[in-house]
Structure formats: structure tokens, C-alpha cells
Image (cartoon, rainbow, N blue to C red):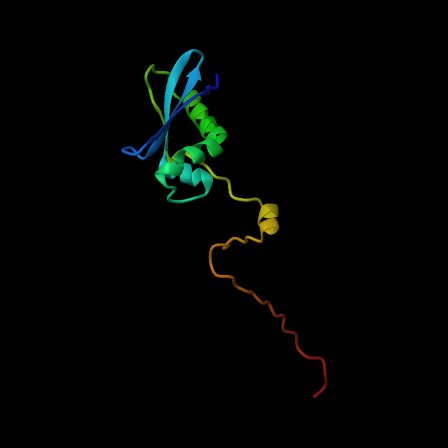
Length: 127
């Protein structure tokens, strides 16, 4: 059974993680997502601590979906904390159509290059 949304606790600066709770029926399930995992999910790096709550709110559906999926795969133990790390965040690569639409190629972050293919044919002209 999927977990349901509950409370936002906030950013834990000691653990560098954002804390929130979800519900399994009437039972509260403590959850955390590391700063690195949230940045990975959001496609950013080095988000400031004061911006973590806004980032969590923007990514909340995805984060809670990951937490619920992890909970469903675990043995239910009262008091267990669901901890989401970067290894739990799977960002699918853009489809070819998305790469074409955005102009991003396979090496979009690298320098642009032009590949020229020249076909050489023997000349049929007489000397």
C-alpha cells in the first residue's frame, strides 16, 4: 500500500538532509532525502540551506513517490526511517525527441563540434 502525504519537518543542517513524514494508514513514517539526492532530482548542485524547503515543495511529488516505493520494497519495521540517497534517484536520460527539441546532443555539456563526412569519388573526366 502506498504511503500518503503528511508533514514537512524541514532541513537538517547537521545531516545535510531534508526531513518529512508520510503515513502508512495511521502510522507515521519518518523520511529523509539527502541534499545531494534532492539536487540530483532537481538537476541542480549546491542549493543553499535556506532554499531547501522551496526545493522540496517543488519536488515533493517525486520525492514522496520514491519514499513510498522504497517503503513498499522494505520489511515493515515500526520506527524505521526511510532515507533517500542519490543512488535511489533515477533520472532517465532525455529521449531523442527531447534532445532535438532542446538542441542537446549526446555531448551537450562539452564543446560543440562539427563532423564533416566527405565522400571521395574518382573523377570520370578525361585528363
